[in-house]
Amino acid sequence: MKRNSGFTLIELVIVIIVLGILSATAVPKFINLQDDAKNAVLHGISGAVNSAMDISYTKLAINGLEHKASVNVINTPSLAEWCQGCSFSYGYPDGLDSWSSIIEGINRADQQADVINGKGLVFGSGGSGIVFTMQGNYIGNSLKSDNCYVEYIKSDSSTERPIVNVVECK
Image (cartoon, rainbow, N blue to C red; front, top):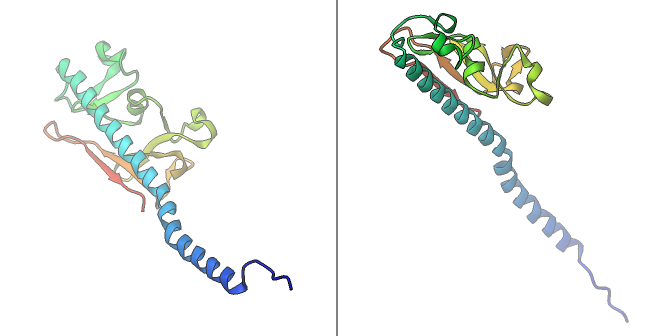
């Protein structure tokens, strides 16, 4: 008599249960990678914003303009070649038009024509300052309320540095 070789039904059920347990423990670790990647982008944006603040403050300090409440580049030819259409307050960027000139590769949320295939970094008004985030976090030119972003809150004093807050994805 010839004996059939193969797996029994019990063996197959046990293998399926073991695979189910393994996938139930591994899948949540991979699902959270997207939020980790978005948070890494936010911290990169925060670094770019802080660097832009330092560079602009240094350029204005060289020209003796770091303590003025309002500086428009149009009236300061030595700054016009560096940052066209920019304005500054106490040495730091002020207003939406300044940021697209200072940080390369970032677009205004209400001027997304340059953003290819819906990808890219954008900024716009939001909260109590200027908000920087990924383009998918905007509906039109408004920030979605449940998204992560970097917020730039300008200073109203020559002795305080603007605040840069990172609101991470959860």
